[in-house]
Length: 97
Image (cartoon, rainbow, N blue to C red; front, top):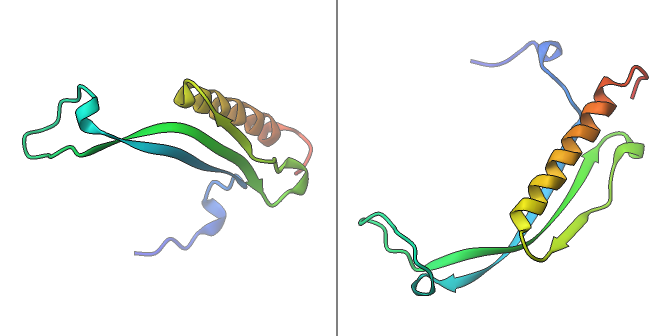
């Protein structure tokens, strides 16, 4: 099976490239419940992220947003939600990209 009707696909030329940084800590240091068949050795603790918008349209590209500090995942979700709103406005703009 092969998709042949390329014109019928939804094409939104924006991508978010994201990278998380984390450090390992011993599972013994945390109160974590694991399935019996699983031997938990280390836990990844997220400590930062970088994220930027990529597109074929130069004026809509962004420099990387880098965050390192408390509540990394909350900050990441805030950033992605904001990017979604911005990309939505760009995509619904009556002017051509």
